[in-house]
Length: 416
Image 1: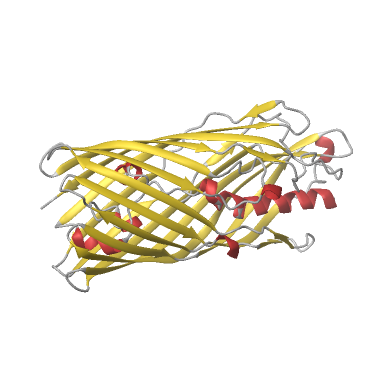
Image 2: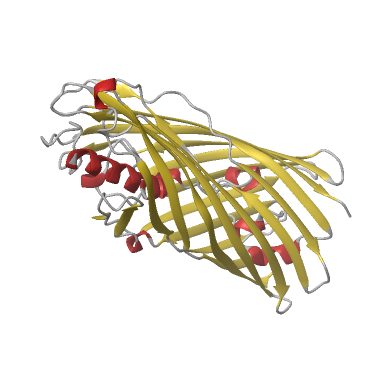
């Protein structure tokens, strides 16, 4: 029984922690920013400023709206556990985080806006009988974020923006349970949700000249309260012997700060760069509580590290109707080698992107982009995670590889 309780605790820790780490964070909230590597903090070219820097809203004239989605096709593999070099691969899946923005310039000095997007929301799925099935089989996370915002012109060269963020999330987890020492297995599934979490984002944008903009934005931590029900499907002789029930946990996603710069060497060319710092080190411990007092609460160390992301992008206007874009990013992940496992097969990653913008009519724009993520190959030799599913520790040492292809489309319309 103690072993089964430990399993459920580990499962809950994954749900409320790992799925919100760097590998499941989505920074692609518009086809135009994605094409430019996400280096958009110092740009105010469209209403996606609602996400990247609300200070830019004041530069969007009239009433504007944009709507779009991103198709994400990730893949991952694991060779091991060492000394084996047998390869396991994730099941092919598609994810479609979407975005909607609307803004209205009220006067020359202030503007209002509203954003909807998915700041977190991906998953992994492995074959049900793969070697790591006692760690994970399937994970699916969806986070929905709603952000009303306002922007104010403080002077001819300086603007300020502030938004309030409301998050809601759902999650599904499937994992096998080793019914040691009975040579049998069970399947544990969990479906749960977070109550609403609240936070804010704020930004500044300063343009000392017409060809140079310097900007900064801050996104606050958001506290989520998670509740879910664990259900176990086991052979008939184990009915009533495996623990199920309601669990709860709290998680605060990390704050992050971004600095950006944009320059226009000519009227046709814009070059931008961002540096984002994420305060993951605040996530050091997670406590999980069972509603049933027969099962004790547990606290586990996570020991994440602060990370950073660097981005650079460019846009070249071929004509009044057509713009070409390209970008590059480097994203450093927060998970130490000893805590890495197939729940989140993440590593430092490189992003290469490109896209086009086309003005269909005077007020109607179409943006398309493509992004390829290549994760650094990562070999773990000091794992503190066991794949055995029983009291005998078997480290999940081995080599991880991952990549992802992303396609985005955004339609934008200016009403006046």
